[in-house]
Image (cartoon, rainbow, N blue to C red; front, side):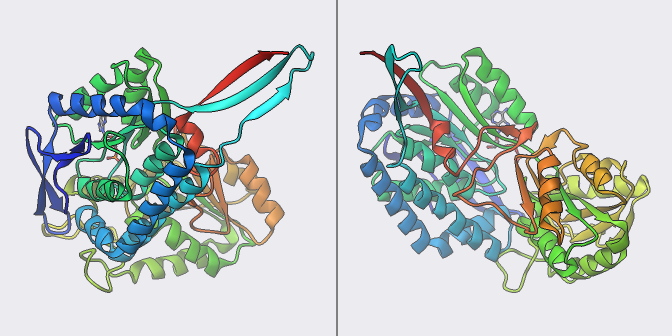
Length: 472
Ligand code: ADP
């Protein structure tokens, strides 16, 4: 297990150590090196020094490095999944799923690296030729959250490498071990020194702000809360740094009366419970049409109530711990406030005693104006609201400042597509509980973010478009 930072091709210590905890029992798993000003500067200097030669490497060379990283990561998936599960708390099967998904970003971007299209055209007036090409933006800062410590890192490292950018990775302080393991893979895959650097600043806010104000830094790719995203956007504005932002969600899950109910229940189990609900894509508000509401609530609550909760690495466990006591307590508070405002607990809702950051799978029913529907729960809690008409469902789905993903279940595809077109979100799942795919553009509208990761768009978050006008 790597615990040092990686700067300019060397594993180094910093100004001190920070403990990483196992949230299922509060024990310390490892101590990782912390960066002070000197280490942050060294990482930026290394990325800057490597930028020009890295930008000139043949796309095929970069593609082969990513392909090798994909192969190593897939072969070592079990070991990395154990690290993910230990530091994040999620169950091992979720962790393994995440690692394989994370590796797929390396494969996808190894394929994308050699397929960046350009353009050569005659101008409409015929006076010149329009030549369009793409160039790496330059030194990129990648900031990742704790909920998908592997996939959020590879979703940024993959396109940055493919595009020819050098980078500094700043993982979440709760889950740095997975990111360090991934950087170790990149080193073994042959990434030249200086191209990827990883730091864990002791003073996150101040160090990141300083990096964003340095002229050597050109690009920021952030995944995390809207609150922190806003701070970073303001900082980035000073030097007009290019930003790609994957922020919070508040996903509606709409079940129409013609839906296949067992399939919708299964879909919601996936959309709600993958990662114990700690996903920006997690179904956060469930809207069910009145004629099927009773049957749906009964069947879904039965499935939720049957989940086995425990330490993520134990076999048979289906719901692990939250990442920290702080996060767990936030979930418990949201539920208790919802109940005070009139919500009814159908299953779960009782905070367990003990040192583990556990919260049970919980289903509540509530009115459409309950406060909980305006908060991203980030835990295993499903608030269910009944609706009458399609128009009402769309209005409720759009009653949020967020717009990352939405889920729609209907037996009529045309009705599903009409709803998908009317709902304000960057992604819509029709009759599916999970749609994330490295080959598809992931991202949100409204306050859920800017830009897209994955798909054909992902590499362009690390490329500048250059137009060259040629006299003919
Ligand atoms: P989450 O709610 O998922 O923890 P955060 O937005 O708090 O999301 O954290 C996402 C990432 O942003 C983490 O790597 C975290 O360390 C980092 N972060 C938190 N606060 C700041 C800040 N003021 N400046 C830069 N990065 C920050």
